[in-house]
Length: 336
Image (cartoon, rainbow, N blue to C red; front, side, top):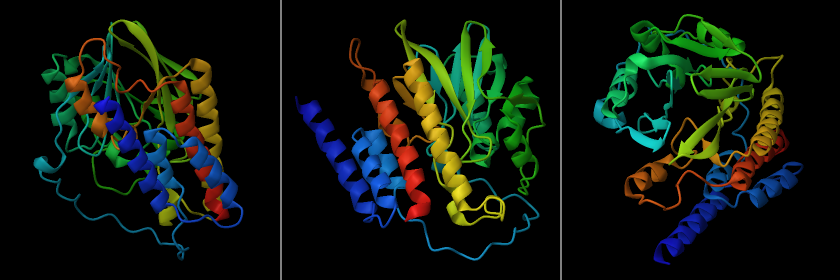
């Protein structure tokens, strides 16, 4: 009873915090914010509500693209980012760092890594992390990249060159990667993902869906997992933040104003919600530990006893609620 009571207190606190950050919506945003609030009863959805359902910052003049520095910035100290790897399901492992997540799907014929972190952390967290878990990084066959931001694609070049892994990304985000001015090692163009594509390795098939919004080619993925032999379905939402609110010319152009991005994001959230419902997804995953609750769920895995509920299994309704919040907050975005 004490644990149950604590969970209620945590959820109420999260919800109160989300509400405190969400200012009273104005004009046409109000019904969408209300719909997001109504859907945000689960802890994951409440966190998302507090992040997305807020007024956009003041409109700034279009920014000029800044030249890349002559040298990439020095990596942060290991103590600031290192995290221990964790087995989450029979065939799914968390091999991320403090603020960013990489997932390893282990199959009968090798490993699929999803989002290989930064170039400075991939060897320690992904390659060495797999070794710590008793797995062989030489068995990495595919690297699936949700979107071409450095925190998720920076490590792809290392895995491509060290282990010969195939790198999978959407066409739009291959283009985004190749035009990124940052002076960090970038993967060479390889496999191009298409909407609804099946990526099969051994006994496991991942299904990839194009969900543009966070970037033009963001990929969200349906992943079959097992817990003690019991089958579950995970829905990995490929990109969360409204990045265009920064006004970056990488997003905002005359052809692609803010409304363009909000509309693509809301459509993608609705699309992936319908897919997750159809496929019976009862697990929500993200590439940031704060988004899917990994920050608290990973420590809970270490304490979990046989027969206890799995921290990541939240049920199909809660997965749907999370994606409803994403959709409705995006619909509210241009209407504040």
